[in-house]
Length: 340
Image 1 (cartoon, rainbow, N blue to C red):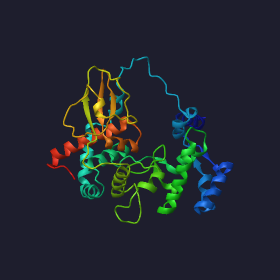
Image 2 (spheres, rainbow, N blue to C red; image 1 turned 135 degrees about the horizontal axis):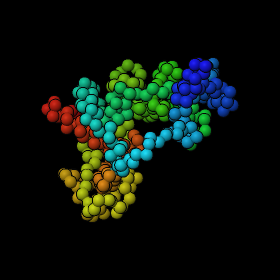
Image 3 (cartoon, rainbow, N blue to C red; image 1 turned 135 degrees about the vertical axis):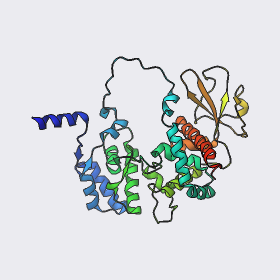
Image 4 (cartoon, one colour; image 1 turned 180 degrees about the vertical axis):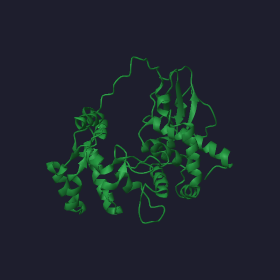
């Protein structure tokens, strides 16, 4: 009886793992044949991998509402209304995040210097990306990447085609870099390493910066250089600004469409005044950050748009920018220089 109760409690808590043999799916058998024929992978190894997959329900719940766990309400307390930007950056711009970023940047300053010389991306932005994506390497993900990608590729969800392509890229990467795909941990969506690259990003952006013959987002040098390469190939412009806050009349901005998808010549943005020096004459994006009682409005330059290529979100790109600027200021205060 006690054993039964324990099992019941574990099931309710979602702690028991559900193992599946995906070779029973005809779609997976066809996928295996494709990988054997086109990528020259071992049929025996692939079948072994797919025969023992732990269904990743939490990952699946992100892309299929059917698998989401219902969250219970806690009492009838009224939650104060809060601006979406305030909620978004509560932890991303914390004092601890800034302090750890300064320490990380100083610890690896020689790598950052060499990467800057080659790619022209300031160290504080690369540091901010790593801080947000993996807490400077401390939290790289605890999900088995192969199982995540298999679950999302072959269970019904709105992005199954995308994850099937990522699974192909992951298996191809495992062959090229000579690692066991069943041993790699990552995010709930299959992203890997300090910069949380999806497998398909390796082909175009990952670099072997430490010269060990492998491209690995798990090593600091490769991760820093790969993110810089990602930025450079997406159009990062050295010496140009990223974003600057502007003033406008009122508390809520509704005059023009905002976000990285929209771009305006500055001559069309009458009534908007940049708060500080802004030596940038090209068209800009209008970025709106919703606070509780007002909207912050910012000009976003080309480099701001480049950050959105890493994660297609205005808030994400602005969090990277603001964290980078805080790390830069604190670094200069502590070490008396700007790392370049």
